[in-house]
Image (cartoon, rainbow, N blue to C red; front, side, top):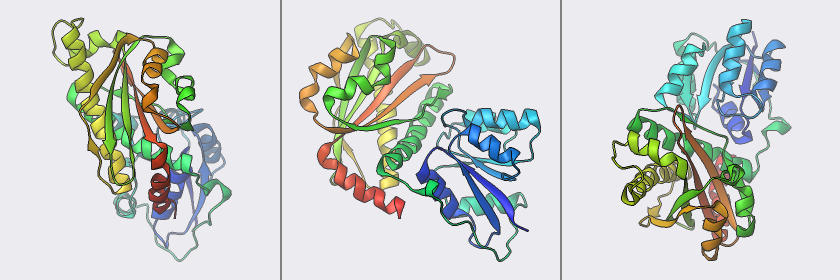
Length: 331
């Protein structure tokens, strides 16, 4: 008997990877959704008996889907597949009725193990659904999914160190001129002052700089979480920025390097500016960057007034190598 499967993820790359890791001889009919609202419609139509669900999506996220399925008693067994690997994320999806949790990037072994563990997998000779236009992946989508997984690694490390839950966004990825950078940044939407630091990185054919834009209103709460006294002291503020940058930048770059199978070397972090607008900080350092591939992640900590933007700026010369590396994921 053919089993209706739903893969619900806003990333075409993630949908493609998920479909490819399903057991080869499993008799299934696969449907796809790019956000939670679409996913619920597929489930209501009876095409999502088993659902592989992402958490960070536009329109309606994975948590909202789980809540709706639970409240409406919809017939769906849901396995969460996410780059957000925080322990509290696991606990929350289980409380909302998820069958289990698999971290991205997925592997055929992990999928097969879970399907067999819960008695879902029945192998019969059948044909898996062929790829649809929804499965076509472009480089921007691939970069966004790479950033999504790396973002989750960094958030998990920060959450463990501070015993908090880190709220994660959908990564913002663009190829743009530096003159367009401030317009693209989420931080500028709130007109808050920031302090920033910068750390260079380089690998085989890929180089750039990581920027941490730390919202000034976050220093007091962050210092308390770190057990530091005198949160308004200059040295304390710099220590908070440096420690946060070491965690987020290091873990994020490690997450990218693992996926692209390469290593990055990092320079010592340097403070770019303190208590200024994003426009001032970017403008004062614009001579360092030209056309760039930018990945922006806005991290927030639940129940605390803590917010910072992590920005990775890859040099224009890095883009061909990135495309080459990502090509292995797209094939």
